[in-house]
Amino acid sequence: MIHTSDSHGAYQSLLGLVFAGWYVAVLSNLTDFEPFLVVPTLTPLVGINACRVVHMPEDYVRQVNPRYATKEQDQVAFSDGYPFLLVNEASLADLSARMQESLPVNRFRPNIVVKGMQPYVEDMWRKIYIGHVAFHIVKASERCPITTTNQTTAIVGKEPLKTLATYRRAQKGIIFGQNLVHEHEGIIRLGDTVEVVEKAAMPNFTPRVKDSGTNRTEQCD
Image (cartoon, rainbow, N blue to C red):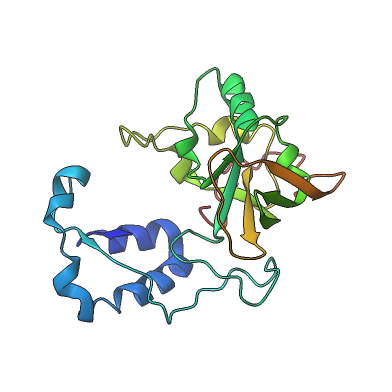
């Protein structure tokens, strides 16, 4: 994770006290590593002065929401709420068609992208294997306004939340993608086969009948 000298307040106001709590915990462990963390060569790459690299200490445990954990050891580091976020290319293509604009997958910041599926079938998945690693689909991902920021230009707009709100709004937010936790350690590789071993007849969220007119969600997945 890259930390800048003026970013703490912005992050706290944007993502709230839950984020700020573990963010401060990470920064409080910088003292012993400070001589090794200043990285001047990052400045021309990110366009911000005083960049330094921070790490999640080995002895700091940040657990996932116990309501969705599959075991006591389920934890997460710098990602917002869960260690894995899965996005389906077909679902993204459907969203892009509705927007009449090609949307890059980086707007949703997934670390697992699958293809060759029907749109939104991931809503029904409950357990999958990617290669030899088992994953539990524990929660639909509620999306926050960060998804409206163009990752190349930093321009903020209304999409994709404006379009998603017309057909993917749930009780706690606008849904796109699925949060996963792994059952055991292993290696997954580009091109691995996805095997669905458990699925449900219905999505893992309940659509809202009426749009409340807000894009606010509980967290930024």
